[in-house]
Amino acid sequence: MPIAPPFWLWAAFTIAASGAQTARNAMQRDLVATLGTRGATFVRFVYGLPFALLFLAVLSAAIGVWPPRPGAASLVWAATGGVAQILATGLLLATMQARSFVVATAYTKTEPVQVALFGALALGEHLGLASWLAIAVATAGVTLMSWPKSAEDAPRDWRPAALGLSSAALFAISAIGYRASIVALGAPSFVIGALSVLAMTLALQTALILVYLATLDRKLLTALVAAWRPSLGAGFMGALASQFWFLAFAIENAARVRTLALVEIPFAQIASRRVFRQRTSAREWLGMALIIVGVAMLLMM
Image (cartoon, rainbow, N blue to C red; front, side):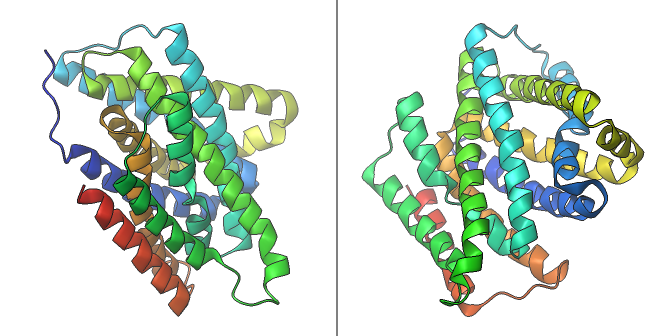
């Protein structure tokens, strides 16, 4: 009988994933100038696949458990999550071009509410009142951070808001798809189940991207190959972040995982100030405080 993981392990995986994802987002943003939004979006998948396969091979050998053959349900859920993630990542990078790095990240963090709703509908994973309250407090912080600074700013702020919220919806669908795929796979080890679905998903995403580029945009395909040196770092960090996300999804409700993931916003704030030299307003600091309160409430349950 498999040994149940420690109750805190999903939180450790989630925090590690958030930190790695912030680094990956920053690396992808730097690649936008060279490869454009689509090219920077594709990098995390194409260059992440070799690292995901390496993670799976090493851990399978270490644990002594090999990946099971996926069934139809696991494949369909993985494909759903994979396609949604590609679209969500592209919208996230487009949002970052329109607003600051930290605020663009905040827009997408309305995701936990959508994950909770989709999870209840698709997987029957219902949350208690206390969990909903924690999600509501954290989401209020996100809303406060992303609200236009003045009436004059509102007209030009609707586009990044729409992009960010759409990205959040697709990330929510992606999270539900991945958790459902891991559950449907039924691997004897949650570690191998998570990494098997990760490798399977990245292989599918990479195949779709390469077929698309070879058919419709060979110039971008050539640019992706030429930019392999800076792309390897983003690919590694993308695979590392995804590895931790999938491990968290394997052992915990997706809504709780994505709510705790709001700690990414303070990480993004650090990156915004130190890397991009972007300032944060007092209201955005207050919004981050609400996010932290909501996350703390969640962890106390």
